[in-house]
Every structure is written in structure tokens, then in C-alpha cells.
Length: 166
Image (cartoon, rainbow, N blue to C red; front, side):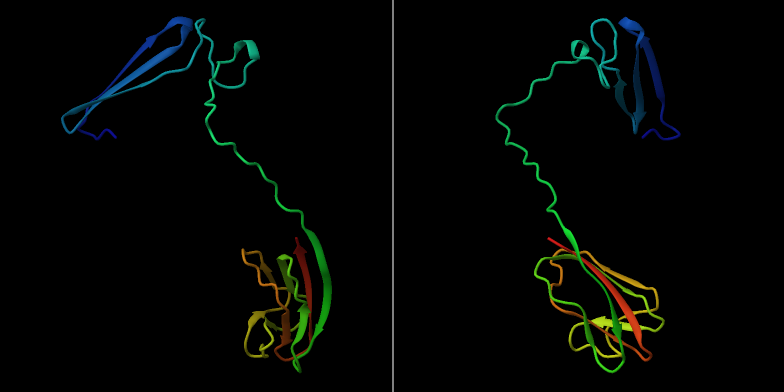
């Protein structure tokens, strides 16, 4: 990149077809650096970039010894287990049952009190806290596929769930 004390020279020339060829040269730390910018054109000066009719397209040779590119699509998924589950502070309940095909899940505290989300050892004081209307989305590789539990911190609440299965 030229610095304030470096010199920059720009030479422009018009080539066949009316296109401009710009040649840049500048000195950096005593060494001359040269560069040029060109527009690809055919013999008549027509630009070759962008979409062209077949007759005006640039011929391209593709190597025949390249490995094929495998094109795959995402596996189809189904939204399953939409449910609202009543949650109390007395005992943890399963809000999303185990699913070996779980690819993604969403859990929302649709009630009016804080709830905790976690495994079977969850308590009203330990686990992921969801405040009213908070949402927990789990969309990672190696998705947890076991039972997901919820328990209210104090007053009863409701937890809504939805998951996508492969």
C-alpha cells in the first residue's frame, strides 16, 4: 500500500473496442511495484464478464480428472411433540420425552413463574432458569436425545415444547 512519501503513477491507455487499460506503478521503500487492471474482452472489444448468449460466451476447458462434487440435501425433518405441560415446584416432570431422532428442540416458559430446565436430578434451585416467556432453543450437533425435565422455582407455571425429528 502506498505511503505518503511514496510515488504513485497511473497510466491509462485505450485499447481496441474503446476499453481502458489502467497500469499502476508506485515506489515502496525504494522498490517499484507495478500492477495493471484490465477488462476481459473479445476480439471486438465486447466485455466477457457477466451473463452472455452462447455465441458470445468465452469457451472454457474443464479438467476431466477432477473428483466429482457430491451434492446432498438436508435430511427431511418433522416437527413433533408440540405440548404445554403444567410444572409445579413439588416434583420435576418430563416436558420433552426422550427421542433418538431429535435434531432440534425449543422450550418456552409460557407461564407466569420462573422454571428450571435440565435432567432428572433438576431441582427448583438448580438447572437452566427460564423466566416467564423466555425461550431455550437447542440446535447443536450431537443433540441431547434423553428426557428433558422442568420444575417450577416456587409458583406453578407452564412449559411449551416443540422439537424437530429426523
